[in-house]
Image (cartoon, rainbow, N blue to C red; front, side, top):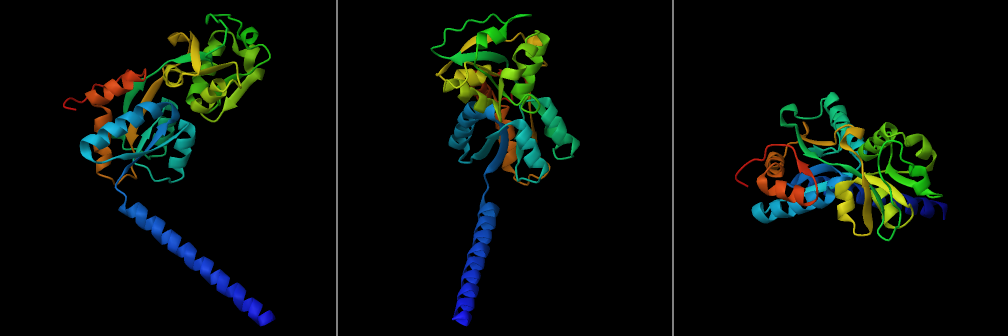
Length: 271
């Protein structure tokens, strides 16, 4: 029995090893055969980039696979060797971080978009807030919490904290902040009514009918909100440059602006 049992265990191990090796080969083969452009993009770009990707696929028959997350998380994944062709950050700091690791094609980098940050509440909220120096955000929150992206890493959270500090409201709410892993996660907290107020991009607010904007932060209260994009040095996909060019086109510009972004780069004509 002992010998039979040991043989059975060895057989099972061999089966699992064979399956594991087959899985690795299948995964590697699928990746090698895939010609889709892989884009790492800030979560706030989802609606616009999904539309742009669909338009590009319709025109060219090609498509991009877009991974959406907070810019800080994407930058760390790129640093760790995650395979991607393009990085589209929601702030300059995380693009600078990736550039400092010598991971981007410097000549391809451009500042493509601008945005603004707003205070949002659930659509049925009766909260009224006038965003100005010395405004009492803590009173508007009551016993609730303020939803924000992580204030030390997520770009929208960093912009939000900077604005609150500039306007003298941070100390009153710093212990009431519900920090989320991305700006879209912060938006969900407000959309579901789990937080009475949140700070997100104007474009995020426009994407969710379950929230409403109750105030806009003055542009001078925080650093300029700039979205840089660049090809990554590890990219070997010839279609990556084509997709980047398409994102800078007149057609893409209209789709970005439809979602509320401001287009900073000079559009490429002909598309």
